[in-house]
Amino acid sequence: MIRLDKYMAMCGLGTRSEVKRYIRQGLVCVNDVQVRCDDVKIDEEKDRVLFESQPLNFKKNVYVVINKPKNCICTTDEEEDGTIITDYLDEFMRARKLFPVGRLDADSEGLLILTDDGDFCHNVITPKKHIPKTYYVEFVGMLSDKEIQKLMKGVKIGDYTTLPSKVRRLGEQKLEITIHEGKYHQIKLMLEAIGNRVTYLKRIKIGNFGLPEMLMPGEYRELSSDELQQILCKENI
Ligand code: URA
Image (cartoon, rainbow, N blue to C red; front, side, top):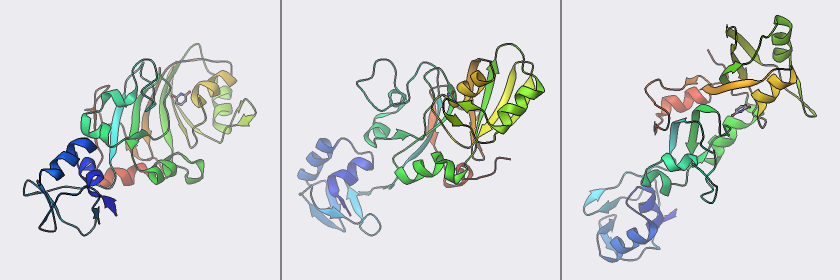
């Protein structure tokens, strides 16, 4: 059950104070009865809410894929200096108070999921669920086969040893790395652990869901339920 004003704000009709005004103006009906009181409780599964005689489309949770641009911080804290990821969202999405599913560094780019579903977020980021995250990596100098083997086996970053990862050479200074965990600066620190340095980092896949090619940096769209299943897939193919 959820308060009527919150329900309407979650449907994208405006801020809590705007929707309270609509309710007081008599523009809202619940199960064919006009209501003027914003603390009426709504059963999201059963109740039928009309605004100016039109049924509302309620989504319990929202899931968005955004192509995170460089120089943007993965936070919802509006006090933070500089551009934050929610600056790219429209008013409706901002009202939903979405948060990032795992972080990308300010200078990293690519696939980022935003949601208001805490359970989904936990399931994607916890190493216990083994959801793979794949990164395209550019680095300086050369990496020998032995160094690549080390990355795959696990390297020490601080006092933590990384879990086995998949590494694919894409070119002289280009790799694809798939990990199942998300330690702070993990890919950069893994390369540092073998005496190298990342110069460019982009997340390209989570689970079996790849960053949509049509999505330019800063652009986002909602995910379908099929895509959510692809994200939760333990194998990336
Ligand atoms: N690893 C990093 O070092 N940075 C990121 O943004 C993501 C993974």
